[in-house]
Amino acid sequence: MTSHSRGISASIDPVKLDRLAEVAVKVGLQLQQGQDLVLTGPVAALPLVRRIAEHAYKAGAGLVVPFFADEELTLARYRFGADASFDRASGWLYEGMAKAFDGGAARLAIAGDNPMLLSGEDPAKVARANKANSMAYQPALEKIAGFDINWNIVAYPNPSWAKQVFPDDEEDVAVAKLADAIFAASRVDVDDPVAAWKEHNAALARRTAWLNGKAFHALHFSGPGTDLTVGLADGHEWHGGASTAKNGITCNPNIPTEEVFTTPHALRVEGHVTSTKPLSHQGTLIEGIAVRFEGGRIVASRATRGEEVLNKVLDTDEGARRLGEVALVPHSSPISKSGLLFFNTLFDENASSHIALGQCYSKCFIDGASLSPDEIAARGGNKSFIHIDWMIGSGQVDVDGLHKDGRREPVMRKGEWV
Image (cartoon, rainbow, N blue to C red):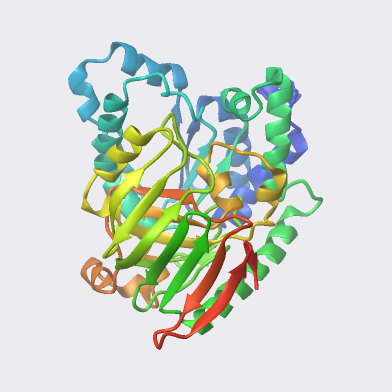
């Protein structure tokens, strides 16, 4: 059977696409014998879904169950759906996913939707739909954010996404360029990508070990438009690359990944910070974000573009104005060096140090698997319906580690590890 007959664009290298599927299963998930897999992605990503299913079954998967989204169906809702429908979401579906995770299933998501799909739709409806979906998704999100299961995200070069990244190119050229960028960032453009990931994970592990050994009380970010002190949660733990889920399986949740990250203290963030890259969120490009924190909470915010959407995000719930993650990424990361804006957080967050509004990860605590939600909150962990990363690092930003006794230690200078 030819690649073309299986629906792959001639612009996409079938060998590298197959390697990406193999890495998703063997590195991203480390799927186990007999384990079911819940898989979501855009219809356009069907060629990758098929390859993932092949590698999953070769690895001994129980059942591979895919769920697809379609851009035209999404737009139909906004153009013809009743107003009341924007306050609803398919809670039954997410409850079913949560039940599957309770039963031991793994989770794999394929990113690739047009990031600007909803840019022409009513932002109030977009915000309502997002809030309803976030609330309905909570049973499943808790299993993912709590790292109860092995999960992974990879990407596929959907043509509508490719045209956003490369607007001046013909569609087939744009798809080819985006495919090559995805393959390079995902480390599947080498003969042995599994070995490449083993080496990369070891490098990230050395970073986390150093940071955990320092046990900083806070991080201080300084640069143009930024003077921000991020207190770190009590008993926080740094992670990066491969991590072991509560089910005992070691996986790489994000492919690609260049970050090491941990949990801030929700009440101990002070100062102001300016974004260094645009944030693409639900069809809106939010640029020039500038916020001020007091007592861990954003008390003032503005954006040069997309400010209305930013404010609606911040009003999602009480936890939306507090931080759930802080991550360090060198300015020289491969994704940063590509010079591309992917309009996709999976990639753009790996070009720059970043912070995330909203829900924290319970795994970013010492013995986090055994902590109750109340214990996580007592240590400073944030709770929210959202988790949205945005970039604050650059070649002009310095990061210092602050010890509890006030001592200051350099961590990054001009965006690079000291």
